[in-house]
Image (cartoon, rainbow, N blue to C red; front, top):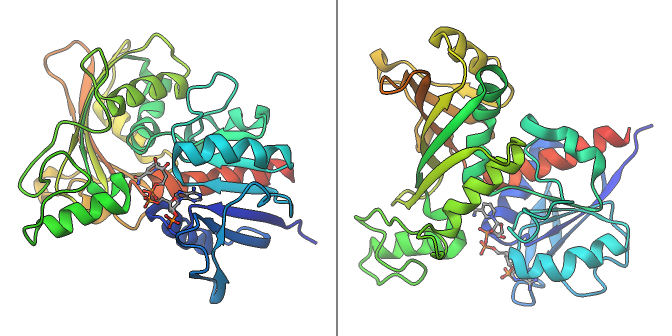
Length: 332
Ligand code: NAP
């Protein structure tokens, strides 16, 4: 006998939602029921899951009346703010991919490899971090535990899929000479140092998300972090250059070994053979790829490294499903 769970997938027709369907098939969680929700626009369309066909339902205020154990939301902040509390009031546990609840102090912000212990004290909603934060904190947590991080400098090279289907369309249509609709400038032949809106301090919201979410997940509210987030003409998988300074000294071989032994990380690092993480390699995988690991010779104790992950998988769908998997394990 094995307990089975019901699951609602909200935003099932989006980039994250469609990938969540694939990842759910791969993970084979013990599910008794699954229902796919989207807006009125996609209601009635068909979705294939494990060789069965499902009809997409419109998300409404009564959608959660039928009772669900879990819901994964990938439909933006407005949908999350309205519907997640309704789902919770009907006894459902929500894992939300939007930024709606991430920084609320009583809502856990979870990357399973890093802080799954936070899952034991949730109040119905669990927030999935921003895609660029998730792939950074997986290796950073390993390094912080061993060497105590003093300061982080993030520089990101983010794929257009991070801006949803409209972002992907801008690159594909731009290659045919069409004007951009999603990004402020053509993404073809450009690197755009502007993701999400600009804030008063001159940073973008994406950059501040990385800074604030990293502090919350590593449980270091005072940690010194700075970030520059850049959109690049890559369809999928975010790349990041991370510079990190430590309190403690390190041996580079030991440091690399600790990353090799960590859950969810694939060290891809052999410069003599031109081996380093690439977006084309990471796409379609659930792990975080780490390479170009080298001493920062300008400081006492620090390194530079390059980290790449599928932003729709580990950056969104996979991480959310790993959270649900952990919740099921806790429930046993
Ligand atoms: P997307 O491709 O634009 O998909 C949006 C989804 O939300 C579609 O399924 C859409 O359904 C649904 N939706 C919109 N309004 C709705 C409503 N009123 N009720 C129910 N469903 C509604 O966007 P995405 O890239 O998948 O991103 C979805 C969410 O995940 C966002 O919150 C985003 O911030 C977050 N996220 C994205 C990434 C990423 O790298 N892309 C990473 C982390 C988090 P219709 O088909 O009916 O329009």
